[in-house]
Each structure stands twice: as C-alpha cells, then as structure tokens.
Image (cartoon, rainbow, N blue to C red; front, side, top):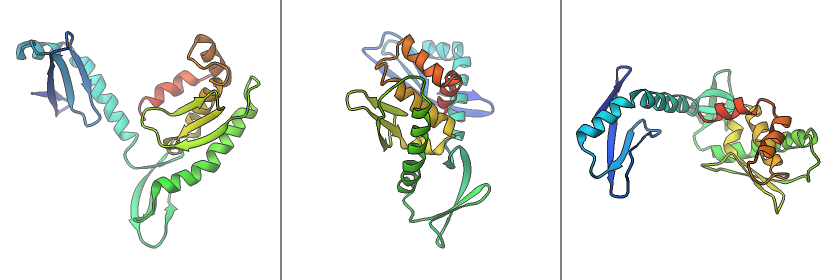
Amino acid sequence: MKFEYNNNEYDIVIEKKKTNKNTYIRVKNDLTIYVTTSIFASTKDITKLIEENSSSIVRMINSQLKKKDSNDGFFYLGKKYDPIYVEYCDISFGDTKVFLNKNLDIDKWYKKQAKSIFKERLDYNYNNFSENIPYPDLKIRKMTTRWGVCNTKLKTVTLNLELIKRETKYLDYVIIHELSHLLEANHSSRFWKIVERNCPNYKEIRKDMKYF
C-alpha cells in the first residue's frame, strides 16, 4: 500500500495487533507510514481511514522532512556546513564547507568544544537567573530522548552533546529549563513561570526544537 503526496510515493506498513482497539497512524523518520490497528480491521476500513486522515499524514510527512533537513549535513552552533573529507588537517571551516580528516572522531571534537561553550553559557545563565539557586555541576553526554536532565538531589545538570550543533539560544533555553528544576522538580505552572521569567520566548524555542 502506498500514499501519494507531492509527486512522491510513501510506503504504508500495516501492523495488526490483538491488543489494539483503536487505530494509530504515525510517520517515522525514514518517511514510512505506520498504521497500527486491530486484527479485525479490513483493508477497506484501513484505506478509508487513511483517506480521512490524509491531511494529518501530510503534516507528519512535512514535519519529518523538515526534521531531516535540520539534521542532514555538518552542524556547528546553528550553522550548516557541507562536509568534505581530507587528509591534510583535522578540521577547518570555510563559509559553507567544513574540511574534515576522515579519521577525526567527530563526537570527541564536539565534546571538546562543548566543554568550554556549555560552561560559559551555564555561567552566564546562572549569573542572570531570577532566583537564588545552588550552582550545579555540569555533565555532558549524548542523549537520544532528552535535551537536558537535572538531578535535584545531586545538584547536577546534564546537557545533551547534540546542543553544540544548534544556535546558542537553544542551549540557553535548555540550561534555563534545567536550572528551573532546582526550584521546581516537576513541570507545574509555577515551574513554567520561572522558565518564562528567565526565557520569555521559551514557547517559540520549544516549538523550533521539535524539528531537531
């Protein structure tokens, strides 16, 4: 089964499960459309459902395409570069290209940059924070589902290494988000008021980050 949109065809995978009473449609990052439904759903029922939800499927496809465009290539501090692999240097930046040694450990290089930049932004945001809070220990690691984590007991803020690829406004927001957890461990209305006092445009930033 295929879904046609904008002169392209997208594969549709049907997953029938005994435990499913409802039908769910999602588009994965490889642009495959997954329909999870009951074992009793007929092909006619599924086809009708896809037709009725075509506008939602289009939105999900466009969202994944935008996310793909935001992640394809080499990114550093919000700027996208076309990678070119060379042997004469470790890394060198041009206006639109980055020259990389094919043996360079990119994650190790990113982490080296992040150690100083993340610390600098943590200090800046901590010193300008609206409330008095303890200064946290900073940790950096790659995470697949979170941009940041705050351990309120140990007073530790862990930041996702992937933030080094984005504009510093996104890094600042995540830092402010985690610093706010030192006052409110949950995501209550009080928590979001603290975030807003320190990052007034946080809603816009959060919206942008859905495409990363």
